[in-house]
Image (cartoon, rainbow, N blue to C red; front, side, top):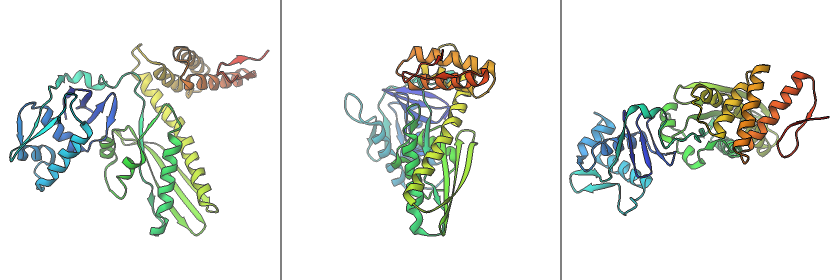
Length: 335
């Protein structure tokens, strides 16, 4: 994909290979995206089934029913046009036609699509943990840990987490992390495995930045399996607690790199966390200024007050002073 198109509430982001609605990724398969680009790129024109299958599958021989399935899925994701009817219509015995009037955007805009406003927050998917125990009856344990990690991550307001049903669609499927991320419309993936032996259990988890395939964080846990449900809660909290600061550091570095001077409270918090994790007096001073700015800009954003408290606590340790952090989130010096 090489072009951006906007139609209705949607942006077809050619550079990143995803469909956005109101700034949020829509779960569309890679084949669906190729079909949509072909159709949107020729609005009002009828594309034959052969042309569409070539666009999505290349020279791979497939049954025509595969095309019908992908088109049906696209229609479901797009929904009806505001005036009624489908964005994609069927031309009997010939093919399909896109009936909207898309606007083509220049490639310069793809780095930050309009629908991805400055309020963009990272999306993450927790893929089903793989059961390495060799016992099918232990599958419930791997699935349960996956579900608990999803639940634990949803408590972080600044993070969008893909729902369980979408993540579990990739169970027992061997696909490249980048492809999965494109289909789900996420920046990050959590992958992992579970191996049970007697009363011992080993759980491995890793956080991957999908586009670069870079491993941001990885950890292995060896536990006594005395209470399955207690273990699930424990591992979910451990993984979620370990991933949060790693994501904040990564997102903070990205925000700092692309800073343009026109930023929202959340972007300011991300810049602040990047400076905070540099662990120097100069960077902590900069972080404190940014957190104060974020808290003032959006008093309802808890992360601004939370990180302001953290940096003040760190600052007091550097200076050998003691502070108190009132419940309102504002830090002050103890007399």
